[in-house]
Length: 174
Image (cartoon, rainbow, N blue to C red; front, side):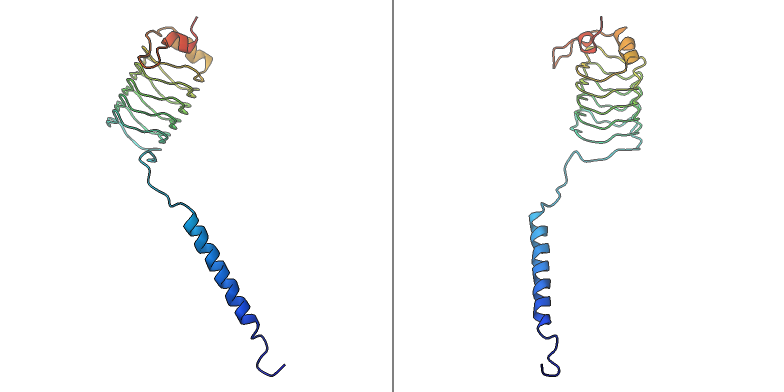
């Protein structure tokens, strides 16, 4: 080999490697779909939403974990598949709300208006329904603690206007 020509064959190979790497990265960036903002991706975790009006809103898939929603209005709102763990709906209006498929572990529904609400296939373990209005509420397929069912059956009545299921039947009251 002549002096000064050592290593020259390595430079084109190195450049080619970098070009291939850059093309691969550009291809991946182009192929990965860009994230688009979705209406229901708002996260209300740990927020105070007391007295707010969410009536008729589409809130599917939203998180309300540990949120305070005292006397908030969710009349006719779609809260299906939401996360409500440790939230408080004290005296909230959930009339005709859809809470199907929600994860509502340790949620306070005390004194809430749950008239005609749908809790189909919801997880409601360790939640509190003290003095809640449940006429026409549908709990079909919901997971509740036995003591909750016993308490709710004491005053369960009405038929859900959407599903046609009686509140007593949906709770398995005897």
